[in-house]
Image 1: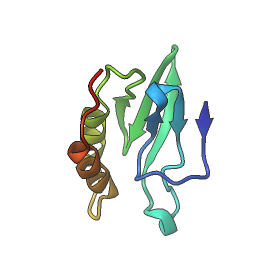
Image 2: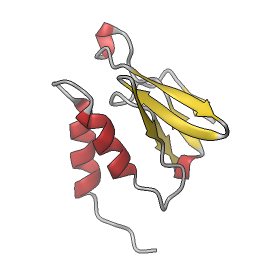
Image 3: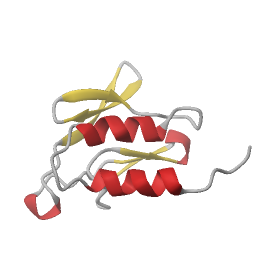
Length: 96
């Protein structure tokens, strides 16, 4: 499922193991003027982040943190993705 109207930290955010994609990246100046969008190509899912194509992690085994780090490197300051990364990296891991 793909949803908008809930602004993310500036990139496409996968949730629930990739079953939900949040795509309202805040294109407008009021929301940060982030340049990102969803691309579905040959059954694969990507974020185009400031012109760069990043594969979106769609399973719990894929690294959301690695994806967000790659997206954050492309964003100018102030960068809300860095705060999201700090939150994710400091969260306790759940044993599986």
